[in-house]
Image 1: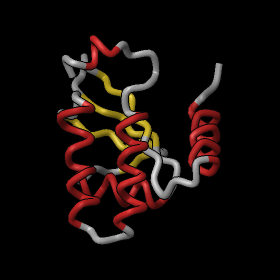
Image 2: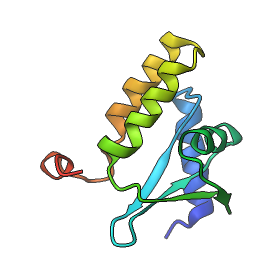
Image 3: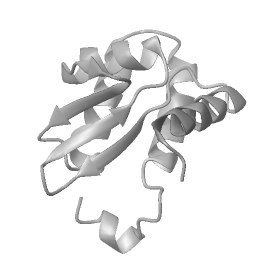
Image 4: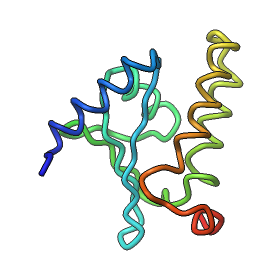
Length: 115
């Protein structure tokens, strides 16, 4: 079984291989109504802190009330990148990648329509 450190190592590897500025990985606990973001870099921490006003503890940022990836997580991130003139073309590619990858980890498309 891979622990948190192993997971962080793999997430960093994916981020580097895909040449991403940000890589966000969240585990959504629907019972306790909280999203746990696994933080892989200071940039990811700063982004989540700015967008969701969260605090990091032990490489995890937990944000209460975030349940829906499509309605609560992706839209504020899109708004952040649209309103901050980093490198728009690069950010658009990042948002496209985010939209493609946000529905992974075995979720069926039919189930995603509810979240």
